Length: 96
Image (cartoon, rainbow, N blue to C red; front, side):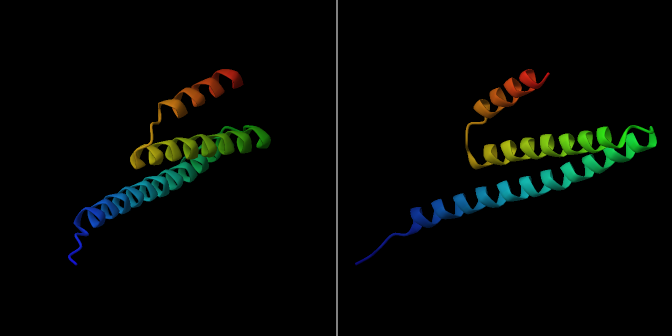
């Protein structure tokens, strides 16, 4: 019997590449979220902002960037991200 694994291997390689790209995007996004959060905290500390406000702003910045990185990574995997964008917009409106 002669088996043709070409299409199967090709599909697995494509899935593997998408997963790798998604992990790289999320990793870079996570690093950038931490960097931006530390920058916001340092900036607010220099401006003599209240410690609680500084922590809250840093945490909010980190979580926001982490959510954005997650949605972008899902987009790299091939998921539709319009629903996530609408959900994030609704949450922003509700919080505001």
